[in-house]
Image (cartoon, rainbow, N blue to C red):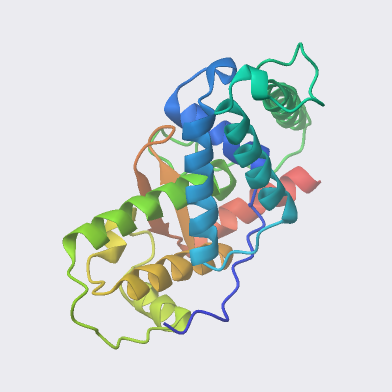
Length: 259
C-alpha cells in the first residue's frame, strides 16, 4: 500500500476527553459508573486505528492512554497494595478521571448552549439574505455535526467484517494510492447521489484497499466534495456527493453568519 507517506490532518478532529465522552455515550452508561477496563480497551482500539490510518495524533491522546492504563492497573490491585502517595479518601482510582469528564462535559454543554443562542441572535437582525427552503428531517447534516469518532467506528466495523470474510492466504498486489481511490469514488458518484458508508468498500479485495478507500473518503470530505449524515445519533452513516448548488448554499449561510 502506498499510503505510508499520506498524513491525515482533520480540522474537525477532537481531543481525548471528547473520545472518552463519545465512548460513554455509545455504551449508554453513566459517567459515574464507567468500566475502566472496557473504556480503556475501546480507547486503545481507537488509538490503534488512528495509527493504522496514519492520522496525526496530538500528544494528549498518548498521555490519556497512559493514564487509562495506569488507572486500570490500580483497579487490579488490592486496596492494601495501593500506591502510598494516594490519599486514603481516594479509594476509587477512577474518581479523578470522572471529575475531569464531568467538568469537561459542563463546559462542552455550555459552549453548545451559547452557540445556539448566537444562532438565535443572528436570526433577529433584519435585512438578511433570503434563506434556502426549510430543511426537512432527511436533509443532510453539516459535516461538523457528524463526529469523526462515528466515522472511525464505522470504519472499524467495515474492517472487522472484511477480515472475517476474506482469506488472506493469496497475496494480491493492488498498490492503490489515495489519489487512485479519489478518482475512483468521484467517477462512481454523481452529484447529489448518496450511498451507505459500508457500500463504498464492496469492491475492495484487500485490507490495504479498504484502508486507502477510507483515506480517500476523508480527503474528499476535506475538499468539500463529500458530506456525511446520520438519520440519528450513532446511526447509519450515509455519504453524499455535494452538488454545486448545495455547496453555494452552505457558503452563503457561512457568509451571512460572518456578516
